[in-house]
Amino acid sequence: MQGYVLITGATGGLGRAFAIECASRGWNLFLTDLSEQALLALSTGIQRMYGVTTRYCPCDLTDAEARKSLWQRITQLGLSFHGLINVAGLDHEGRFFERRIDDLQTILRVNIEATVEMTWRALQFREPGETFRIITVSSLAAFYPMPVKAVYAASKRFLLDWSLALRHELRDSDASVTVLCPAGMRTNKACIQAIAAQGFMGQITTLDVGVIAARTLDSALAGRAVYIPGIVNQIMRVLSSFFPTALVTEVIGNRWDKNTPYHGHTGGVRWTAAKS
Amino acid sequence: MDCSKELTGMTVVVTGATSGMGRAMAMNMAQRGAHVIGVGRSQSRCAELKRDVLKADPAARITVLVADLASQSQVLLLAEDIRGAALRPSGLVGWVGDGRIDALVNNAASVYNWYATTEDGYEAQFAVNHLAPFVLTHELLPLLELSPTGRVISISSASHFGATMHWPDVMYRKHYSCLMAYKQSKLANVLFVMELNRRLAQHSHVRAYAVDPGLVNTEIGQKGTSGIENWVWRKRRTTGVSPEQGAATALFLATTPALAQADAAYWKDSHPAQPSKAAQDSVEAARLWAYSERLCGMTWGAGSACCQQGDPMGSPLRGG
Image (tube, rainbow over all chains, first blue to last red; front, top):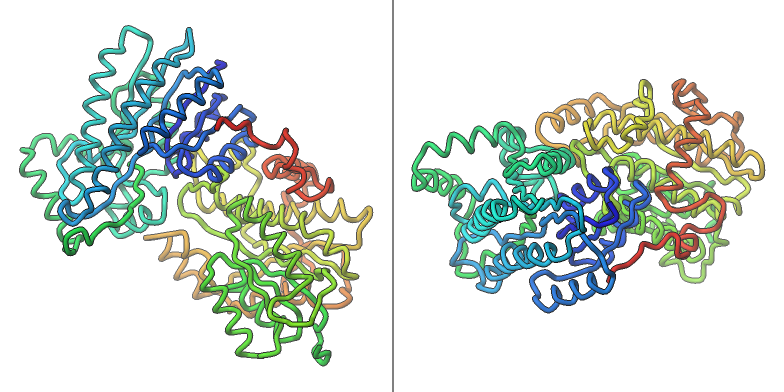
């Protein structure tokens, strides 16, 4: 395979794990994320570890113009892809009405708009003769309405439904779509603290990112539609499907309510930098 | 310059100097008159160290530098800062050092309870505990050569016993075990010292030492763990000796003018000791050396790693 795997959000905890896992399988990488310095470090490290070709280009995926120039660059370089891993995503946690509208729109722009565009364009740059694998990082939150993370969870629901439909459309063109729906992952300080705060539940619902990346790629190569890491998460997902959505929302909402103090209007904006 | 103190004129570098054994070493050597260059990850804890050193002795010479040793690029920047500090100790008007470093104490280490990668994509314990001192030592070696008794001291641990290099998956990516990754990194510390001495023996008077400090009551196992593991580390540390006692052997090696058994590489309780059999395997040591050079993008002895990485082979093909 001469072509590349394109990874967005490549320098975060999960993005790095995917990049490393792909490189360990001998695939060349095209990485993008916000910081050029972080891309340089990761790209260099991966080359040294695995000897694959890594290229990168920084891009602010919230910006349509930046996305345009990213694809111009890819065109100039004459790259083709046999895989796309949509990792980039974000959340600004807090109650809907307490958040700035700009922040809410940014969630939609990265999680939905950018992911749809990156996928559409990557499909134009398919490596001839190779199966094309798309992995999109959604979330366990995609299965439930989530108070306090309302926009985020709904955006992940969008990714799940859209991916499953796209998967159907692509089934005769040697391409597959796999959706990763993880619970919390230890990818950064905020996530680590959030998992620790959940105590025992946090421990048993959390897997190492390296393992998640490996199993997700295995799932994609096997052509699976959805991968939920962790047996506890899988069981919770199945059990919750027996109850009405309104009840599940009530339970989740009550749980978050306890942990989320009220702030004034737009006062509660916090970056969680959650990648999923 | 106050010449009345026994270590006056010495310059020592201590990584991980803001807590535990590193802090004990920094405080101790600064009070005995050495210019201490202390490295820490947190700006505020570095400032706190400096404040405490100066509180104990307003005339003490202390430089603090902030760097995250998990990052290869930050290690290189740190080396640059240390070179500057060895020449011009901060806050010491009119005092100019000769740029030499008498002792480099590679003390900083980390414990991660789960698989975590650094910005370079390397497993965090391997990166902080082994690769960082590998690069830092290489970068500072020319300054250590300037000292008549240049010494590299790496804090290893008895936990290297029973460990072997996990070559099929050095980063423990597939089946991460905090303990195995930690033990391997401490084995790597001893293998590094062994190979470094083999290489230095031919042309340099600088010597390297690995130290087993024993079980010491520090925070090392609690920063990167949670839940049960955090509890175990918390209980375990209470049975350990104080950081000051744990630091004794490294201090002895850093500050004793003429060592009686200068060619002994592994030390415990201020005496030479036997490391594990695996740690004495010169083939393994050479293999780790070559692997480390590859991951750090440099060839040992071919000039500063910064310059080596300036060539087009080392720089990644940029897409943007």
